Image (tube, rainbow, N blue to C red; front, side, top):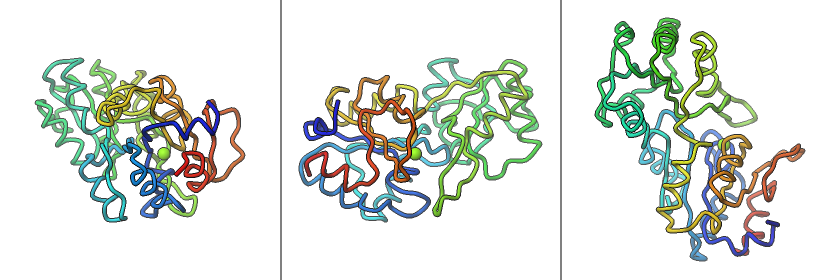
Length: 261
Ligand SMILES: [Mg+2]
């Protein structure tokens, strides 16, 4: 696929952090590009690997910035309860992460186990945790080492912020637990297939008729490529090494031109 082929793509799935927005600020031209795509009748959806918010919460933040949610706004929290149930049945889950993560695990029909009761856990759900303590880290590592599968929204190492700053992402905490426990995580979000499949179903498009636009090669580009979608790497700083994306854009204006809107 070359740039001009994007003019025939019928739907676009956008990553959020480091792509449509960074911190609380829309990327230059992103709002205009999304509005133009929707005006032109192209399908639009969003998949973010956010481990602390539901799709509804993220859609509210998009709306506050004047961006419509399109056909879907998806985060791994939507499906983490279901993923645990499908793989392990109704479980006793140690949740180390945001209250929203615990709530979505509970809504999936699981019992949430207190940190001090980590020995009872049959599954560990680990997300970005702004209240992380050594006690919580220890509980997650011990439960995982004892055999509870480690289920995580994503393994992205960083959460990009304004001005090139970042916070450690969910993947940084996951790496600590994996190192201590000697285990590998089960990833719910990108680059795994389920959220891509749901977005395509909501857009009513086959994979080859849709493109994923994102800034992460391992999560966005690799995941979308495996799902059979076209891939667009958003690389505002340029200088991208071998990336494997079909198209690389530096700006949303460039994407808009390639999409023919
Ligand atoms: Mg991103």
